[in-house]
Image 1 (cartoon, one colour):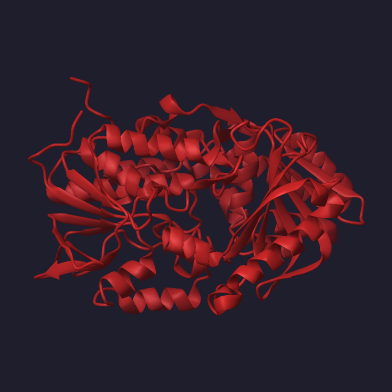
Image 2 (cartoon, rainbow, N blue to C red):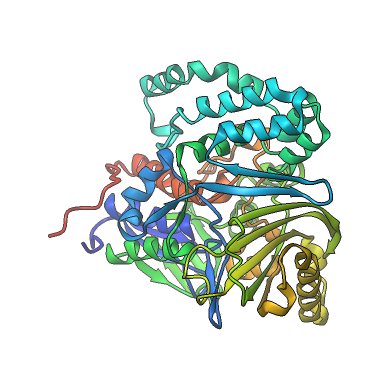
Length: 497
């Protein structure tokens, strides 16, 4: 199938997952999309890169399926990339306390282990288990709410009626729920380590319910395989690309977005513009603050962003096959990284797919919270500070991986500035807004009042972010575009000629 030569022209700012998803759905719905990507490669934050014999996977630690699998199927990803169901999500270890909890698909076993840790919390843990099983039965909305009929909205509410008690009980943040509902200090620590404290406790229900049901997986071939499958779906359907190219301004005439101006001065005209840049960049920079600026600035003041991270990755001549893919190592000596103190190590061990490393080797990664301004002001000291972080990370990992320092063959350190230069992540917030209650229940609109012809998609429109939400956001933005352009939305590719 090739792109139409007669449909409306659509410029898509950003070639990450949201942009690629939007491009695929736009092609099927009769538009002529062109993706403009700042980087020299597609994928945005969903990225992986090759360093010597090792692949540094910068994104997918787990892939959420269930109802979201419909998206991957529509986009042709499942036809190109096998998914491996996670049998074990992670282990949680508390240094010096003898605590080691395996978070596996056996939810009953997890509840028993946590009850042994804190017997006085047995009733609340049982409620958590039951809530997870209730939550997994709910189908998250795939279609944009704006295009649903009143009957469809009422049906969704009716189908969710049985979960009302569960939603009310777990409506708090993880931190507030743990402090108010749990008695055991170690149990509270467990839950506030495996999820950000400000995240709604409903996230725990989703995680545990989806894990038990087999809805969490990893793509065989890692992030690169998933990203490349979506990029190929767009290219093979005839989608056009301009890269690397940086959009400097969204061109507005008579209250309508009619194209973009690139950093080199080139002006590209179109009938519609869809921006997947961060919401602050779209509103405050590309539109010059002319639309919705006050609301965006208020959100930047009152909503929380994901903390920027340093991703320190090491290619090691050890398979470390005995370790699970994720480890939460809690209670380590305080580790200062660019202005932030870390007392829990979030460690990924890439040991279950030959795409990451040669036989007998693996890649070990640690995500460390840090401060954007600290890195942005290092100047000439920046390379040396990266090396210092690598050394500190090796020292922190050494007690938990036998022979680690001697086995290291490659060091790779990505900082918040890496996420900015690679994917234009505002202040290094790689997944945008934290999914606090305010952000989740009053999430930004995909259009701006007073401006026609502009649509937005991406993680910054879906607090909490992540792969499925980015892909879903692109789909929903095209649904809104189709409604305004009086074109039928199509989720399926046209049959081959």
